Image (tube, rainbow, N blue to C red; front, side):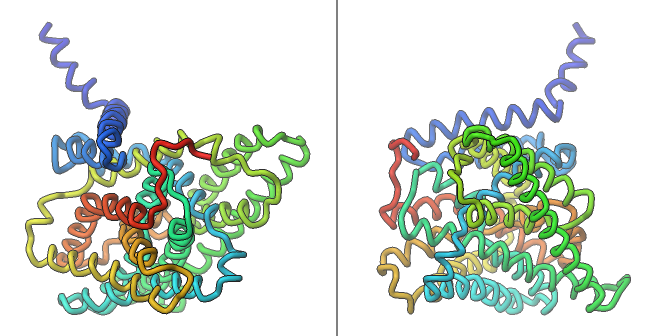
Length: 404
């Protein structure tokens, strides 16, 4: 009996069992939240906070690292879906709207940079963090759209902005990271050398995307695969893409976004990918956000200076996005408010990078790290709710109806 009791904690703390328990708990709580009219993603938030570093400590950074490939695969589906929602033809035709959405990305970065400078961060470090804050969190936005079955002009604009913002953030992060590395105490190369290295990773990621998409297109044509069989071939191509990016240290984010872009803008045949794997995507959303919540340190919200900076940055993200939309006549006043709110969520360094293509995020000072931790804590707590409310404000949600 004593021996069995001694073995029990080992079973309880099995990494795979803990992840499974967390995912199960997030799904159960999420369904209960949805029944009462709240976003289902908050089930993942609650489960992550209970089991993570702010709760029982069963899910921490060490445990997450053991399943990095699994989490990268879940991220692959999310990032691919982001790229698949980007309509290049629409962005080109509606230049004013596309320019307004791009301007919002730029203003979010500049606004965050200015606030961080005001709180005493150096220009290089402020630029590094601001580059990350350009991006809108794809897990939050796509999950809220999926849960509420949202569709309409504001949702369409938001989906395109998520892709644009992540691309802009990736490019800005490559430049800022090259600057930080070239000016560190143990710098191995000058700025131009580091910039060339980052550009090479981006170019290699793009080449892998084109190659994997080419293999997907060739395989479907040779096998004459029916529409219902193509998702399996596409999933295989996505896994090849992610694996090749991982072993070559190229940019998986850019590569997976491009895979989605190519499917949306180059593939002319019927696309049933979304309908076939929606369940897998929903589970991926819950898993990724549960892990984000598990690694959040709620106590960071009780440090007043980082909290103040985080609140100012969060408010500036919404305000500057709304400012960028002001001159566009494509959306009504209410729709512009809705778009600005629905794009408030942010990503962390690890979520933006996905793989090991941009390692070395150890350039933050104590203040910078505290501000980013407070931002991520706020994002977990209020990001999904504000995004969900923004979609509601746009009057584009259709909860309870069947997804098309």
